[in-house]
Image (tube, rainbow, N blue to C red; front, side):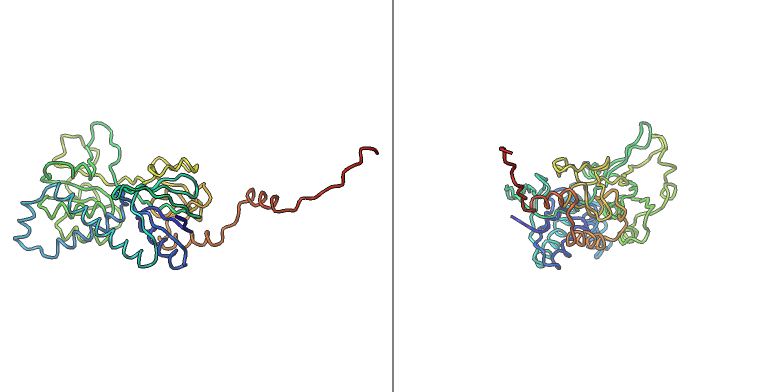
Length: 335
């Protein structure tokens, strides 16, 4: 299958890029992941889930949630919310004329991808003139030295047999606030340390769910994150570290190497070291324009695609091939 633009991932900026490509009447394909969901799509899903649980929060419903709460139930609810959010975006993209493939992509060349679709046990080969990586990041715990507070990941919390009686979420943006709100609705005494944007909708939902929100560990009852283990009375879930979803893309095939956090280094037009391959959204670790809004990032990439100029060594080789051969008169050997 041949396309003008292929976009990998389900980050917010990836959807902005697809909408812009559809509006420009470019043949585009969206490759959505089956398991590696970006922090943005997880945050949107948690917002949907927590809002629905807060709609009918009577005394009887609160008691019922507190009795029935378990990590297995929470995993099921989050997975269903992510599936619903993804289906809504798929319907939107298909209405715009964008083809959608659900699977895990990897590079075979700078213009070709292999997409492995586990749900249908099929493999597709995609060719595109330009490829945009918008896989986003996942939230996980930072490395801790021995003897300090043991920080858990969200996955570890949801893998337990029972929910803890008390838990503190640290950072994580919408993912941290959303998970804190969800756990609190199931009867767990929950606190959240948010040092970044305090105007988030999910922070408001977390506060409405009974989460204690602070900007410093002391605000939520912790002396310090460097405290010894004996001073810890409840679990701490760390969501501060951002890791880019890039290790599964086989970027080494096209000569692109992510940084130690799995994020990409891009130029001011978000082009990677490989011509025609771009990064967009949270997966971009460094670019002069990283702070731009996702819609502006998509516009920059589209401008680069529409006004792409051959690099000098490619242009010179092209001119040499297109010039007519000049025939010189042969010298007569008898002279």
